[in-house]
Image 1 (cartoon, rainbow, N blue to C red):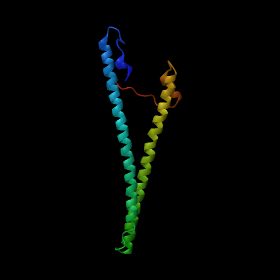
Image 2: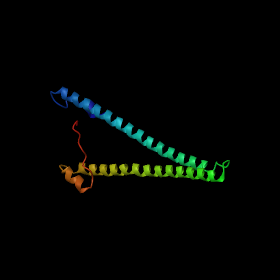
Image 3: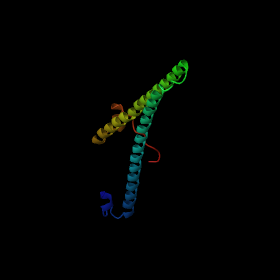
Image 4: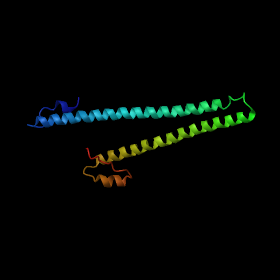
Length: 143
């Protein structure tokens, strides 16, 4: 249990402010949990998309050899089409893998920079992020 719930009179005289602080803490915790769920869902969707594309490539490769009942010319065309589709699905899966790895690396770099900035009290964050080639986090108008 967080200290915020057990701090009697942490703010002397102003019990309402303590209540507001507790409410804000609960809301922030709920947002954190929702974002964690969103990240889990997104990762699962990404995993499933890659698995599906892999299965599609396999399926097209299997069907490339199943056209023995048609003429040789038509069979060659059907095989070429099936192999083209398999190749397309494999390339699409590779493209997504590359795209989806890049944000993870950028986010890790950003977190390392934030951690280092937190260690330096009173640091000019704009200057810090510029020195570490990291994007300065944007603040929204609603915060």
